Length: 286
Image (cartoon, rainbow, N blue to C red; front, side, top):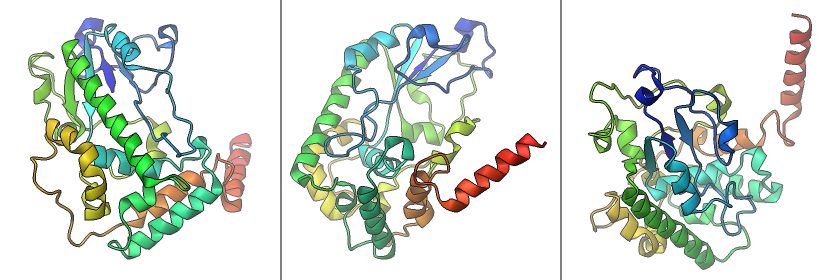
């Protein structure tokens, strides 16, 4: 979810929208001076049994909508839940989430197996937390999407613009027509804070077609189909999967291992710690 303030309202040129790299929950008094946009992470990779503390769990829909009233153009950015939970599974292992080592080793082993034999394991076999009944996990995912459907309806009623992530990545900003100056040149690319460079994965869409199997459809279609059709991701027919998927370790096992064994985390390797020490020594004598 992004709360975007029109640049014109702050006297800025259209191509100078201002800083955007800060997140809720933060008091307005702490927002950077001249800020023109605000990003709020909604429903991150926590949830039942994940053993990941769910950031911002104290924020409810009413509080989010109240935040939006402080901006000229609040925007709700939607994403296909299948891609959303694919990304959430891999991002779950970032060291700041304090994942359990046993959970990580299990997830890494299953991911590596699926990369070699894509049809052996459904995505739900990887993503369902250890020790949690899959039925309870699916019920939790259903509640989350239902909450998002409700939030979308309330946001539209309160004048929010709603943009799909996939349209944003394609450069399709038609959902903002009439809401922003006609001479603005919007693009899906731009500079990104170096603080987030290590968590980039594919920056694409429809990756779920490679990782998911018909077993996943049978499990989650009853819970998500209404939302998928409402948001234009499905038309009522069967879900379409990649018949010969290539699962790149750089987008799977290698990626998640890099988040878990980050040099600043408790599971950094000896080489990482030594390299970090050498950089510090060089900085001292520079």
